[in-house]
Image (cartoon, rainbow, N blue to C red; front, side):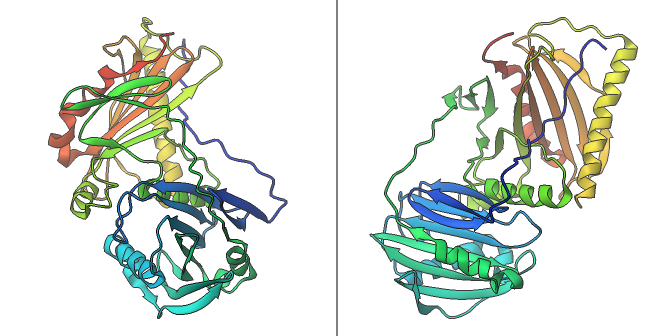
Length: 398
């Protein structure tokens, strides 16, 4: 076969020094020690309506065990002094309204405590939230900032020295330094129906019915936690995407009606980029010629890879069943980049889902562009989605 198309887009495992039990997470002056095997993410929300304030940055450190436990920690703080009782009550109410599983937890009375030398409020909770969990809300103020700590896990963790070590290691010395992240994305309005996204290595236009998922969103954070746990338990690699587009409104926590409407729909545009040191892929504007035997072999390899991926998911307890798998198509888009198209229909939780994978080549780089939506919602997505492939271009033609 003239070309071997590398199809595996995997997240490279992170190998660290596991000799130390603790590692320190430091974000904008707030630090805490967590077990070395835990995962973590630092985020910032630019608006906050939970406590009656608007346009105030809310900073957050999220930490979680990568093992099959509910052991988690979240520290949030904003530049506004809020009554500690209100802070706890507002957060509980917000979670119960948006996440029904949270209603299964039992919350004790809010009591006064001394926490790290601060006057604080504490509310213990317990119940079933993806398994039994016990923990505490702790709220306090310092230097005109309001903090809330949410920590919990299984019974062993709740009663352990590790639980106390984490809380006692917290240093809320906020310095007011906001670290701006350099953006590699340029957004251009094309017309009333499409927006063009210019990333570092490639660009394309996406329908305005879709939004680029914020890496700090609840959806994104939940995905990272689940991925960490599955990788640790099942010892398998999980493909990761550089960018995810979802129905507009899915992360709009300020508008619960629009958020629910978006969550009821299912459509995704996923982008994964890979670069190779060698010219492993089709060149721009290359003439592709396969014999029937070569095409059949390539077609079979795509189908086998798809079935292998489904089997890995089944081993992880995620049922995957295909309704139809089409033969691959090899073509060029409007910008003369060669792509391989693989289309199939799989069963979904709320109806069959149509998926199209495009593997777009440019000599030593490739993009996997995945477009999916429920078959029952084809009238909402299909017309616009079919145009995306022809808008795609690599930054440099090779």
